[in-house]
Image (tube, rainbow over all chains, first blue to last red; front, side, top):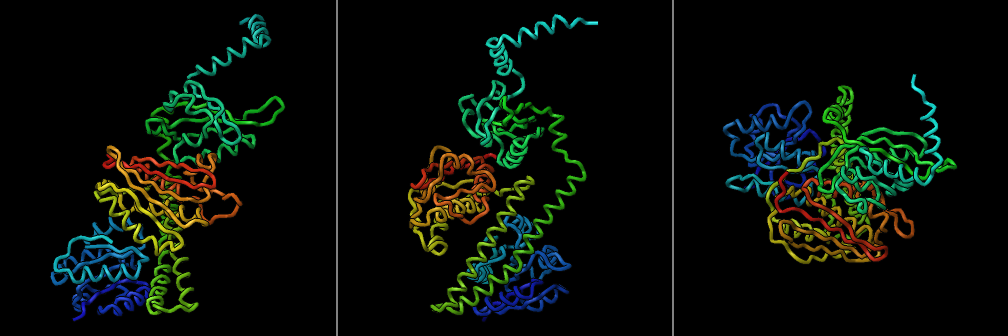
Amino acid sequence: MSKTVVFIDDEQDILEAVQIILESSGFRVVPFTHMKSVQDIVAAQPDLILLDVLLVGQSGKDICHSIKQTPALQSVPVIMLSAHPLSKLKTVMKQAGADGYLQKPFELDTLVKTVREYASAQEHPQKTV
Amino acid sequence: MKDLTNHAHQTDIAVHTAPAQTEWFKTIVRTADEGVWLVNREGITLYVNDAMTVFLGYSPYEILHQYIYEFCAAEDGLLLRTQLHNTFEGNTQKFTLRFRKKNKETVSLQLHIRPFRRENGLVTGIIGTLNYMSKQQINQKHEPCPECAHLNKQKDDFITMASHELKTPLTSIKAFTQILQHNSVGDTSASAVYLRKIENQTNRLMKLINELLDVSKIRSGRFTIMKEWFYLDELINDVVSEFPMRYPSHALRKTGSTDKRIFADPDRIRQMILILIHNAVKYSPHKDAVEIDLSVKKDSVRIDIKDYGIGITEEDQRRLFQPFFRVVDTEEKEVPGLGIGLYLSAEIVHAHQGSIQVTSAKGVGSTFSCILPIQSTL
C-alpha cells in the first residue's frame, strides 16, 4: 500500500510539481495551499508531512506545533521546506519541533530519497538533508 | 607679551640646516606615538613608523612592500579601497578601520589619510596617521544612531526577503525542468540538451543569489556558522562523487586522507570547497584535471585544491580574497562571476579560526590551501 504524504505549500506550482514527482515515485499526495484545521491533516491519515515554513498569513512553525500537539499526528514525521539559508532553516526546524528539513530548490532525487526515508521509518530520528 | 623674535630666528635656522633637519624629521616621524603609513597609488607600503609595528605586531620588513589591504579586516577592505580612491582625488579622509594583527586579533584604528604630493603638486601616494581608539570611541562606533540601525535592519530584511522571493519561482522552474528531464531519459534530441542548459543556468542563478545573501550577511555582521562534529573525508568524498555530474569537462583526483572528525560547520566547509573547486575548473578551461589533497598536521587538517589553469600573478594574489576582486586571464578574456567566491571562502575559513592561502604561477596553475583546526574554540 502506498504511503501518504501531506504537502502544505501556498505556491500552487510547487505543490503541483512535488505532487507529480512523488506520485510518479509511488506515493499518494494530499496537497494543501493552507491549513484550515489540523483535523484536515488527521483526515488524510498521513505517513509524512511536508510543510513550507512561510505560508501566506500562516506560520509553518505554528502549524508544526499544532501537528505535534495533536495525538493522532504526534508520531508522524514533519519535514520543513524553505528557501531560507540552511542555518536559518535548521534553527526554524528545531524551534518548530520538526523532524527534518529540505532546502528549496531541491533536487528531484533528494526529495524522493528524503520522503522515502522518513515515510518508511518506524522510528523517526532527526535527520538532515 | 611673549617675544617671538628669537623663536622665529631659531626656526629660520632649522629650516635652512637641511641635513640635520631631515634627520630630525625622520626621528620625529619614526618615534611618534601615532602610527604613520605611506602607500603608493597601488596601495603598496612605502613606509611605516615604529608605532605601526607596535599596533599590528609585525616587523617593518613584514609590512614594507605589501599591500595595505592585506592588513585590514576582510570586511573593511572595500571601505579602505574606496577611501584611498577618494584621497587620490585630492580629498582628506578620517575614518575608523579594523586591522588584523599578526596574532590574528582585530584592532580598530582611527585613520586620517591625505594625499602625498611631490613638490610639483603631483599626488604620488597617500600618507595616513593612525591611532588606537579609546574604549569609549569604540563603544560609540559600535552603537549606530537609531536611524542608521533602523535603515540597516530594513536593508538586511529586504535582502533576505528578496532572495527568498527570487528562490521561490526558481524552485518551480527547477522542479518542472527535472520532471521533464526525468520523462525524457535516454532522449538525445535538442530538447533534452536545452533542458540540461535550463537546469544548469537555474543552478547558477541560485548560487549567485546565495552568495549575494552571504556577502550581505558578512557586511552586516550576521554571518554565522553552526558547528558540529563530522568526518571531513566523508564530506570530501561526497563532493568528489558529485563532481562528474557538475563538471563533465574535468576529472577530480583525490589524494591523501585525514581520518579525522573536525568540529566545524559542514555546510559552510562544503560551500568553501565547492567554491574552490568551481574556480579551479573555471580558470583552467584548456585543462581537464583538478586535484584535491587531504592531510593532517598536529591539531589541524589541510585541504589543497590544485589546478593547472591560467594561474594568478603575484600582484593579483595579494588582492584575491578581497570582495569583488576579479582575476583577468592572460588574453584579457572576461571570466564570468562577481568576485565574491574567494572572499566568502576566506570568511568561512576565518570564522573557523583557520587560514587560507594561494600559491600560483601565471600559466602554470594555482593551489589553494586551507588549514582548519580540528577543534576551534569559537
